[in-house]
Amino acid sequence: MIGDAVLYAASRATHSAIENVSRRLTWTAIAAAFFLAAFVLGILAVYLVLQPEFGALQSIGMIAGACALVGLIALSMPWMLDRAEARRKDQGSPVANAVAAVDQEAKDAVDYFGAMQVVGTAFLFGLGAARRLRR
Image (cartoon, rainbow, N blue to C red):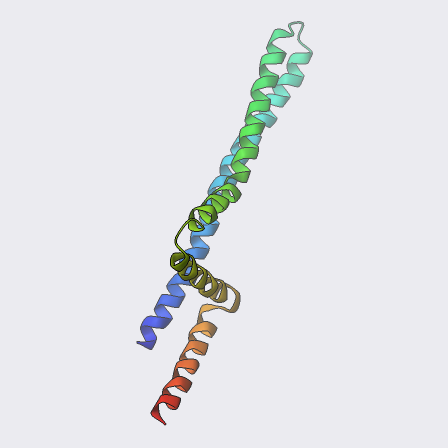
């Protein structure tokens, strides 16, 4: 039973960390690609300033601006997804909200103190409760 608790705590700590990092890394990579495209198109726009035709400059400028805008949106996607998820969780019943709050506090405790320390503390609390019940 203790082994299962340790495995659960370790799985919980690594799963959320990997999921959070992978999501942020994915959206950051997407943003970097669009910022790179905006940079290249900006260089092309500067080059086209030297050209006698100015029609191409305006179109390249609009494309570069759109790429930069998409990059900014991609960078803000993890924040927007977190807010949408929090808003979705707040719309439940009071019991569901209480359970979700307790679950979030447990996750935060594991993230802050570490899985092994939380499992050890829970084991010691359980051991103390068992001794009191035995008396």
